[in-house]
Length: 69
Image (cartoon, rainbow, N blue to C red):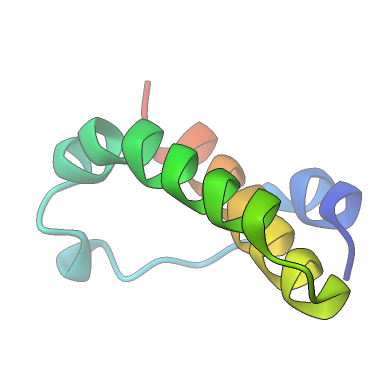
């Protein structure tokens, strides 16, 4: 699954809301987490790991778009 597929299917991502410690916390932390993941992705030389980090960022963006208003 690529980044576009994840973003297109964001409404199909199921979440355990109880595990989020309240969606406000994730909404607050995501920009910092995303920045860290993007820095890590830029530093990696392994293309497979770059793709994995990119997918995690795309999924995070999709989830944030779903729960943070």
